[in-house]
Length: 149
Image (cartoon, rainbow, N blue to C red; front, side, top):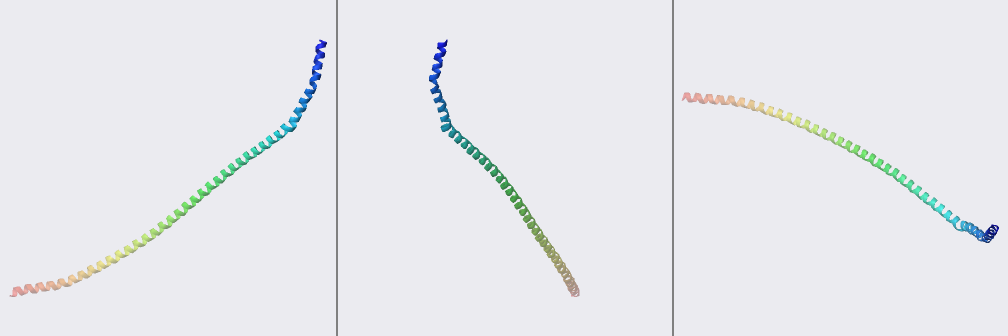
């Protein structure tokens, strides 16, 4: 068994430079390849994460602006509706005033026309009364002339 251990020791002694070279290769690759690669990946992740956060912030701000815009539009519409309602009320009041004025003018004209008609009727009654007397006198005279002839 000593021989096997002796041969095993020699084999390990011969493999020692290869093992050292592998360790040196590993350290060299870690320093020259994996270190910069890891640094680039971290930068890329930071840039990607930053871009994602910036996009989320932009989306949040856009949502806020959209909400502000909607609120402004809603307020403008409400103001417009109030102005329209006020204009309608003013127009209605103007129309009501014009209608009241037209009604009072029409009532005044009707009263005046009734007064004129009443005056004309009174004048016609007086004229008829005077003509009635004249006609009655003519009829009486005509009848008396017939009886006398």
